[in-house]
Figure 1 (cartoon, rainbow, N blue to C red):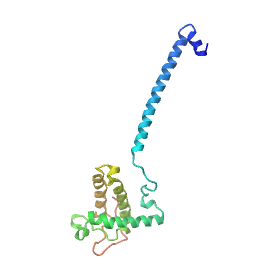
Figure 2 (figure 1 turned 60 degrees about the horizontal axis):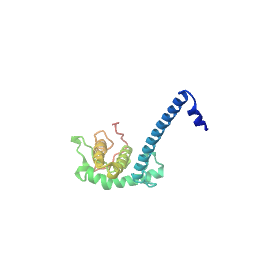
Figure 3 (figure 1 turned 45 degrees about the vertical axis):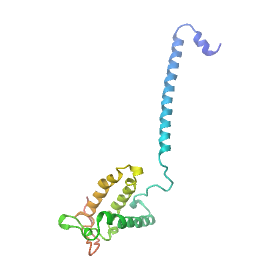
Figure 4 (figure 1 turned 60 degrees about the vertical axis):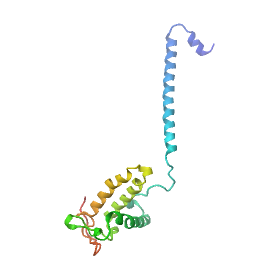
Length: 183
């Protein structure tokens, strides 16, 4: 007889009850493992369905956290994005850039890249634009979120009477040396 047969053949129910408890314990463990397998299969399926991110396809670090050389390259990219996209589409052209000081709106500074606050805010705005305006990543409401949560507050701050452009003029140009008050 094997050792299992010996346990079953013993008199009294203690050994049998112990065996039933072990079987019940093993059945519970099997159910837990089955649930873990299902959970892991679901996660694997979700990972397989997610778009692959190519190496080097990561978002760049925030501009102020870059090395000097990387900062220069990122600033050149930012200047192109702001001057060729953001200003014509959202800040306006001609009279729109002059602002309306009576209404509490400063002009757009023609040398905005000389304002560190503007560089930081506009770089963050561009990073948010790249993430939220790709509807494959952010969904169909991503662009609306970008406008509401990012674009409008940044433009309001930059062109506010106490913002970084407050001392500048769209016609006579940038006036450096003044610091804007904290938001």
